[in-house]
Length: 210
Image (cartoon, rainbow, N blue to C red):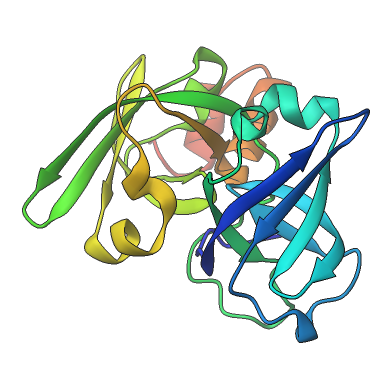
């Protein structure tokens, strides 16, 4: 489990393809407090650390991960957002993030606005029910607030801190990014769907109608 608060921007050093692809990433983390087999979020993808060497670590990606995320587009030199797994008792400054990517979106627009930047992306149809204005979304491992949502696109605002400390500042129209919808929204949608949708009676019992 993660929070979507990026701790470092790493650089892909090399990829070794095979049945499982080995990915070496250069990071600023101190390896002395890391254990073999721990999880790490790499651009929003939960991966397992299988080896450390100095300031570099190795993770492995199965074909499923390569096909469902942007990881299959990585190359040496690609900058990626990194976050260590959340410890019990840590502050939750972002929102609950699993590192299970729901889909890949295309960046449509990046423009400055009052010292910050607006980022707009395409919205995959399957994820549209989970996106609501002022709700949360995880883009390439970054916890962000939705500022606009329409049928086919959504937007977020990047403050200078986010722009400077994550890889989102490297994105331009046409780039692909990993999306993870808010887990709370997914559970709510699942519950409503299992009950056949919201009814007037359910709203009345919840206090929304008289």
